[in-house]
Image (tube, rainbow, N blue to C red; front, side):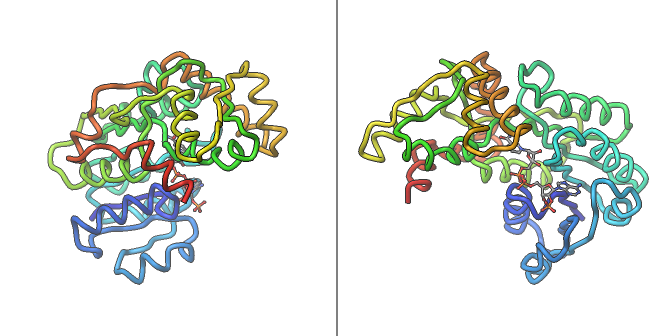
Length: 283
Ligand SMILES: NC(=O)c1ccc[n+]([C@@H]2O[C@H](COP(=O)([O-])OP(=O)(O)OC[C@H]3O[C@@H](n4cnc5c(N)ncnc54)[C@H](OP(=O)(O)O)[C@@H]3O)[C@@H](O)[C@H]2O)c1
């Protein structure tokens, strides 16, 4: 039995879809805080269990009888360490044989502020005594694609990543990697640094966007504080604007770069190209 937490989220749903190609539905558990969100998965035969990261007893019940648990990092930045500890403690009490954790690319040396909770979770896992495997996911390409409509409207793609090269991949690529790791033997102790095959600067992203959109959408590099201000002006909440500007700044220091090709080797195919994803975003 394989449990996927955060299964109602974008990554979680893709992991379940990928697992369904590999194991029978009745060996997959979707652990979610709102079961009504995954009625479609239940209809496919996936077992659905209610489990909020802040409810230790419900987590333990969701993990009962499970062999492996994929802990998809919580989206509630700032509360994640406490929530992840609850998941790890519950998995230990339930006696699972392996936890896979979606961490951040090069979490141990990343300049991104986002790395702090991941590093702390990795340390907690290491002290837990449960066998674990780290899926250190790089940047989702979709993070940048979300800015495409605004870039087209304003004829500029803004950021503060400078000349930093970004080896992003699609969520579906990271999801396939998780499904492979969850269904392959002898994964305990492994650390996968997962990133896209191609690395690009935001100027290169803007050039490809310009080419496909048929009009110039130049990249405009801003100081971090100005970029954050622009995100706030566009209506983003302060913590998210802060996180995105800090992450772009981390990218300028190489924090989102990796050329190990571990991800494509694991999934047995090239990662989804930026150009393909831009085409999909424009469609
Ligand atoms: N590498 C990157 O570029 C990148 C970018 C964004 C996020 N991330 C990280 O990767 C994770 C997965 O990404 P995603 O795109 O799938 O995010 P997402 O669509 O926002 O999904 C987050 C999932 O976490 C669940 N969750 C949040 N708080 C919870 C709680 N207290 N108890 C139980 N479940 C909880 C959500 O449940 P509900 O459906 O009930 O809300 C949802 O299923 C994120 O949570 C975040 O840690 C990475």
